[in-house]
Length: 246
Image 1 (tube, helix red, strand yellow):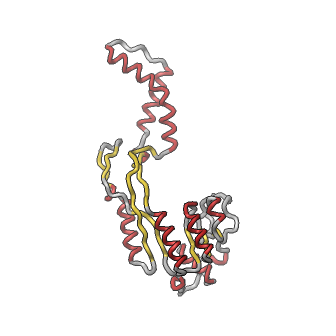
Image 2: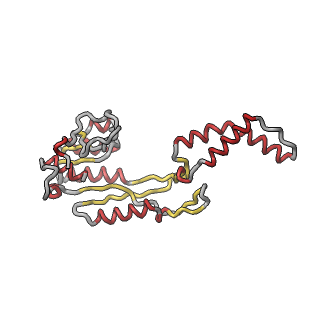
Image 3: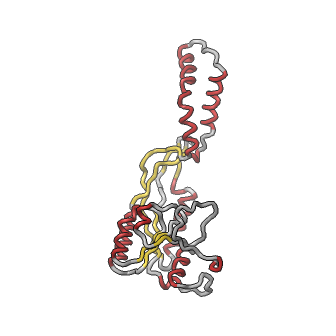
């Protein structure tokens, strides 16, 4: 639907056209992603192996890619996912909570020292007891879903840049619409514009890097703004009017 809306706007076709020929105006619909991570890793909290190839996300994406390969004029470009680091906490609030209790480890150290020395531990103060309770609660509240393996996509940005350059230099298109807000594509956008290709950007209502904003011919949106989104990047956005809704 996103691609259809953009093409209909460019060609002047009504959004509610019953027998649309929008796809006839398209050279290719490029979809960029990466193959799901398929290795096995040991989860430090669950104390069990995680077979990433069998996760719901991996299965869904594999089915999605297979379906896209069957669609007319779709070009699927897949990079790869590599392991960059070990497990880390992806929940920012939980990370801050655990860091705040680091200074209270001396309370645990005192108890450990007494236990190893065979001495009778000193009675805990109420304050120390409260600190130990906070430490225990924090670690009990660390959900396995808060952890993620350090994975990184590779080769996706390169494929986007190569496709933009190829389409431009071979003069296969006159308009390119890029759905992103990443400034890494500034060189490719500049090349396309210098060669006379109209280069439009659809950031899906996300903020746009100033560098990228400067080197595109317009920021457009196929859909109306979702609720509670900032107006910071809404200048010159082309959105469907109320009578253009389907």
